[in-house]
Length: 91
Image (cartoon, rainbow, N blue to C red; front, top):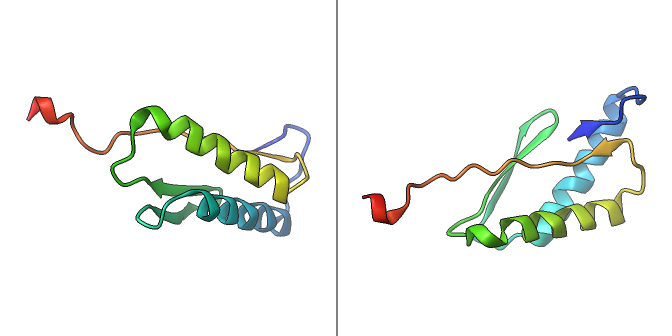
């Protein structure tokens, strides 16, 4: 999560935004996937055997749900995708 440039971060607002993000994540991932708080402003999501082409759609659904639950625009969600396993062809 990033903040807008003109926004002063207060711990209560950060926690409220992150609670909504966690709810949005949990509502949009499968039971086999994992979500955990990674840092004060980050979540780590592990999608088990996810189709790489669908990751952006999963993240879009999470962000849409987040914006429905948290109507303030002082936090801007973003994500970074990192593959965890090599291609099976390379093995």
